[in-house]
Length: 281
Ligand SMILES: [Zn+2]
Image (tube, rainbow, N blue to C red; front, top):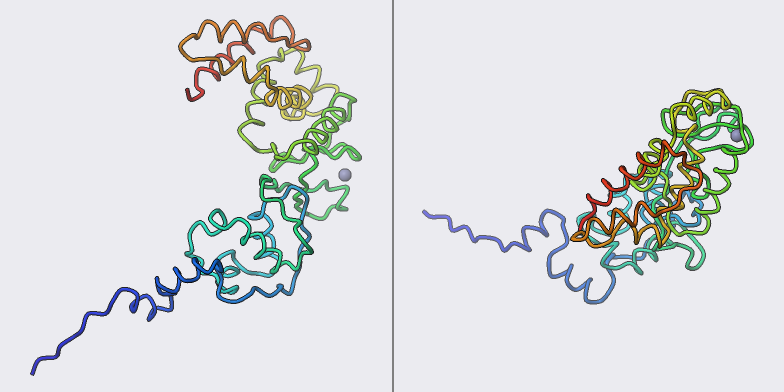
């Protein structure tokens, strides 16, 4: 006796495994509802920070409710494998988060950048180990003169330069729509600060601040370069046509850096030229 086994169609197999059938998925997409039921607010709510990205909010909301992002999505009737949901349906993704987080109205900003998580000032948190995601502060607690970056938490003797740098960075963060902390732009600014200062200047700075932690000593210059790296005239100078390298180099050398010493200038120009050579043309 022969047993005839009928091969099952792919969507039947998928359905048997509990995954939504391709047809159902397509219907959901066509009807414009990427989840099967309307998401209900989660038990633990979290505050939405201004300039926070939807993904950052989603991750915090999931973690506050002891869920992974995928569990959160699947529990809300959304297939975790539904790729590119957030980018394909930006409006619906935001609506989904607002429903889950029980947020009022349209508060989530779809054009912001991720928040950087970092340690909170030990004096502000009364020696508790707390991590914060404050989109509008740099790396310094101006009240207690603490430097706050992962692996680098340190107290320093405050000077007007460092405090002013922090306040300037905060105003840049409040003005712009992106958080530049921890980005390649910030790292480049820090590198430019390092080459623009002489050994003596750094030694004096370290003595004033009573710390040998380099990022604090570089902070005033770093913040100036962070600001410069977003300015039109500077971007134009470093990104002139690759074919006319000499023009680009001349434009770089014509940039004014009032705070940079005569010894620091050649090193700074050389770093900027290398950077501009490595840009994609
Ligand atoms: Zn503090």
